[in-house]
Image (tube, rainbow, N blue to C red; front, side):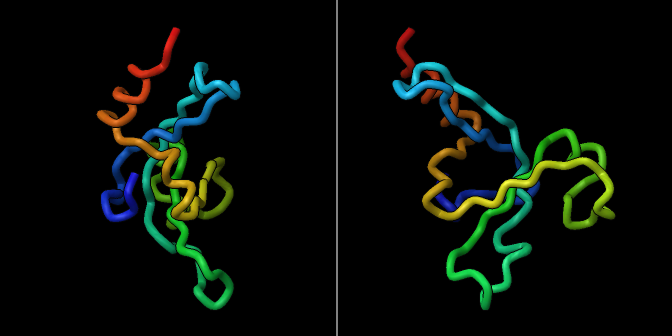
Length: 100
């Protein structure tokens, strides 16, 4: 995904592969929470885009408003890593190209 195309509170798909030939996909559904929501620029040179697991997001909302005791998974990705994030139509296109 391009950074400027991400929309807060929308679901996206984090695509990785189990194998080196990129034939066995691993897909995680995540919610985009925001850009630089925890990053203080004096500590980090790079922007970070934050994603949260769907289960905790649907049960508790954004991790930014959680008390900290709830179980959650949060992913902070830099710009170079956003190439692993897809919306639904992009994900379908990529999966169609995987050879059986």
